[in-house]
Length: 232
Image (spheres, rainbow, N blue to C red):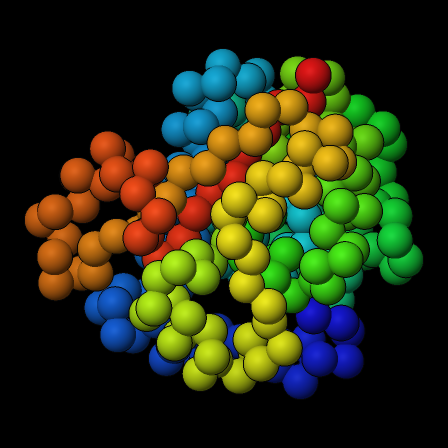
């Protein structure tokens, strides 16, 4: 999503997001916390020491508060990057543990190896697919050796997800990404052994079944997925 497109929706982003996910019975905050809790589980499972996180393409106010709240045990400093106007929120909603930098061109204005974890939540489907490897290489550059990348995206194999995206105003130019395609692009950008974990299988009405999700990550029917890999 370029700056002009983002600006058309920025002020109404939360309300539109809330309306779009209402069918699930959950709020935008639920989905933000879900992703960050999954990120924390992956970091712990992969035994990655975390002191600095890059939140690539940050545009959602929920993540500004959720990231440090859930990852506070890591003592992590967070740098949020944006290709759009999201930086205008920095002074009012970004917590003290985070800073925001604005991407102007095709380079992230951060030093090589500066981060332990590169994180992105539902951003890449707004970026032209032919640019994915370029940005994944940039995230590889700014991540330290042994560090981790985790990219959350909508699952185009889930019909409810496809319907939600097709009826969402700020997704009008979005192009969903198949998990296998994203994994191949991670490899092409230099990331080692990409893996896929599907998630968000049950709406609130079936919340009692959510404990089963931990064992369903292999099943390509979840509403979203996370693609993660390490930097060798």
